Length: 217
Image (cartoon, rainbow, N blue to C red):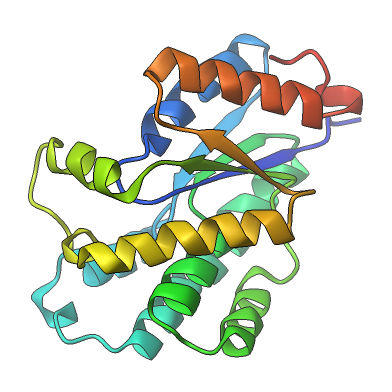
């Protein structure tokens, strides 16, 4: 009988270190003998990557409305869930995803001020009930996150060019969401160095994962 799959998502504002920690965690899980699938949102499949480019870099997205943005993120997610995430979980893989529905709840629902009930409906439709067992929110001061993001190579994407108030709203929205859904979302202090944050993630997952996942970290 195949092992049960495990779905973990990573959330946080720009520059919080999600990509680095996903890579480190994927190595630890692979060393334990498990198949690991690492994904990013938007993206993770051919259609999703096309949508990612439109959302982040294509000049056609410059005047994008908040509503169009919401639906494009949802379209990418709907495809990713059905094409990649569900099949991976069914065969017992561990799925590590850089962003999932909580990003939409916060970025479009809070920072873009779209009605929460509309965002919730779109999220539910896109995911079809597929949710992470654990969501790790890497919390970091908005100004520090932007400073770190500015040090990365390559041009800033459309989402990285928002005003400071936008990112303050994003952080506030994430923390409020984590307080409301504490059984799923764990807040990780991302202000430390890479090793410190990685250690905090390992402790949190060891505490939250029970049964067949106990001892994987």
